[in-house]
Length: 379
Ligand code: UD1
Ligand code: UDP
Image (cartoon, rainbow, N blue to C red):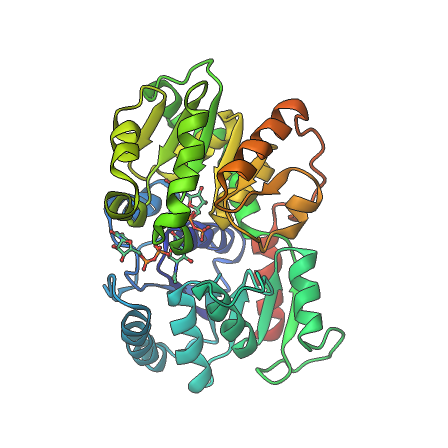
């Protein structure tokens, strides 16, 4: 079986490591993977670092598309993906998540009848102002095999009319949905102890034996709007009076802080003794930080989940989340970009430490399950 895997944004590169590892370890004689990087993320610390440390195989194609508006970026990728699919003639294209690289792969493949495997299918925020919501809905509805990481994802697809107990042959018009667990959980389990051995970020940031808050902010709805970015940083600066905060900065945020954050807050932020403002860190460093953090504050989908994997409370800097289960367990609180709600959530977790983290994300072998199902369809 030949698959073409499309990656482009940081979390997709990380997710692809789990599938490539499962192919290498269990299916090397039966599956050929062609890896395509759209070039959506391109800084060394947003892309190459993951190939090096997660042992992702060499790229077969780099489309070098780079940054642009949604339409331009997606169009450039679509054109190039179509051409390489025609050349490679794969049995499946594998798409991850909900980025513009996912959308481009879905549109290119569906129109020339290459079956799509969507990993991380079924997630919904029910907020179509998010570019990701558009991308994931289009991709799901163009797919032949859909793998949902959570029960909520499975239920969303059922509600949208996807057949559930259908027999094959599976096609875009008779798609098959499997609930199989989260491929990022596979990675977090696999790399958890490796991260402890191979990184020194805790020492480097002078965090040994010190409690700290790990924060990430990159969602365009937060970074691109001063009226949302400022309250988030008001809360962070208040928390920094008594706590250490580690903040690896996504390049989007690094740029928009300069234009959208009030000048006096910028001055405080960039000189604060308790705030470790650092460039994006590697995945192993991120895992080490998540393992040692006291609490996580984030608008990232992946980081919300990883907080849960490592049994840490999480304050979600969004009005809603696709990962509804982690909120339902009480281990994450939706605080939006609201200074008061962020502070209340912090106080809540101080007085009610999170202790119970029931399994939500599968058994750590989602990648093997997906590959077996693909092989059953194309033996
Ligand atoms: C993208 C995804 C988002 C995902 C995130 C993961 C879409 C619509 N959004 O958002 O779902 O959560 O990736 O991190 O696909 N930039 C650099 N260097 C890079 C990459 C980006 O400087 O290597 C800067 C550029 O100014 C660029 C901006 O970041 O314009 C945004 O990058 P882009 O890939 O368009 O969106 P993200 O916010 O990263
Ligand atoms: N991540 C990382 N370095 C960082 C920040 C995040 O390796 O400096 C990892 C994080 O551990 C997770 C993934 O990137 O696996 C999440 O990506 P991101 O937050 O960019 O996007 P999202 O998950 O929201 O799409």
